[in-house]
Amino acid sequence: MRPYEMIKLLTLQAQAKEDSTNYVFFETLQGYYYVSFRRLLELASKNREEIPTIYMELGGHSEQGNTKTRIKADNLHMVNSFDMLYAASQGYFKSTTIAPDIMAGRCLLKIGNAPAGLYSDKLIQGFPATGRIFLVPTTEFSAANTQLTKQDTYITDNFLSRTIDGRNRELLGLQTRTIRGIVPGGPELNPGKIININFPNPTTNKNIPDEASGLYMITNTQHSIARVPAGEFLYETTFEAVSDTGGVTL
Image (tube, rainbow, N blue to C red; front, side, top):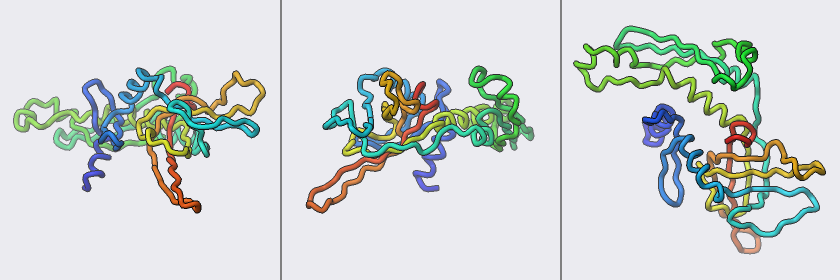
């Protein structure tokens, strides 16, 4: 495997001591980062005053210039929103994990359910457990076999059979709503950055925010510099960001 392919594999299988999963790997001007989604959210909650607001305006309104905390976007649009049928087929509500342990000669069959309170019990029960089937190798039984571990001390529980469905559900939750935007400049925008998206509200009541507005996490960015006809250069940043429930509870 190429080094980057190996790192991508580790982001899906790594597990911290505090049980954090779903890691991301990215590079910024400050260096390389390998961190869990949960850790990124913890850091963002401690530095709320540094979260920039990216906004668009309705016709007839104008706000000139960008600041550190307010950036006017050239374009903001929704890439995808919550799809009940897609979520069900991908195991967001229920899934089945089949985990064979070759060394122990045993196989684990596990039914994973959405956390209590995520949706009503009747709604969860309405989806088949085989909406998504995971087939993963486990070492759970081998790690508990003292005869095997005495012969090979490197045999440890890989926890995949217990975490794969939860990781998948967390990733699907973060992708409940995905947006793509283009802003002028934006060197401070990078993967893992928490941003506040402010979509314009077409109603007359300005106290009601647009339902897609709220906190998002940037998952990838592309910084581009192009020469314009006047002989100058145009610097733009294209980014994609995800949210768990429409940018409200991230």
